[in-house]
Length: 142
Length: 194
Image 1: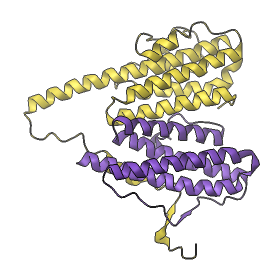
Image 2: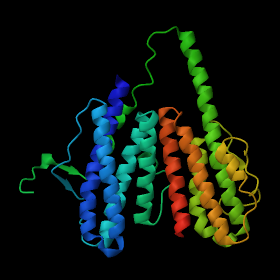
Image 3: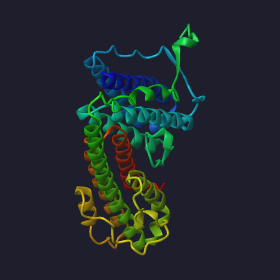
Image 4: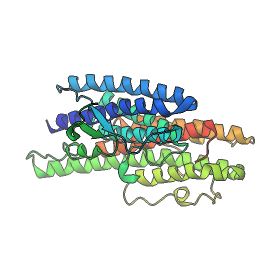
């Protein structure tokens, strides 16, 4: 049972991060400027899809999907394309972190999906930042 | 948002430490079986884990060899490739079983290239084979970099396949390594450097 509890917790944590990403990309989209808009829109759509898939996953595990918070604190003021890009990169970092934990907790298809989501988030972070890190999603090695 | 009591606000980033504790549960219960059988199972699975680490480290070692070969043939690409190469070297170190002797090519700095075209262990896993079959480095620099993109993708595929059967912590590490492979392929194909 501890295993299922661990999987449910990790799935809920991933869902919470996707809620935050969806909210955050709403902010990013308003400030990113024309150069980054298509990328921000694509990322927003991708996070919506992952959020919905995680809601289904939580229900399949017998849980009640976490709701989004009413509001989120931004880590810094987002006022222009530069700060919007930095926020987007941080959102992706956070999402990558929770998916690596979900890989650890899950098996089978759920593990494969989490690994794919981690990879997608890492590539988007690198798009925003122009560079990568050696171990995406592993906060302890950052 | 008229009423934004602090309890309803969440930080967008950096609030992720909560899940970890519960995730570590699950592989430690021994349930009271006879000790010798448990000990034996542990030895067997330790051997399997070691084999999986050896195999996945070899996959990254082969990729590292490809970087060295490309840098040896196209030294002017070194500045661009060095950060990616050094990430791959870190992957080799992180994946190798505890106590394994570091392979020659994992420990050379980005500037060395003497053993460049001889990947240490070419015989294990599909990516290893694909990497060593990458063959001679193309004379054209852009072509050579494209061959690295394929090598990164093949490596990522192999690590992703391996993580499906890996124990939890190693699966998490392999997922990160595979994600880094995807990032490298992206950075190399779009022409960015670090």
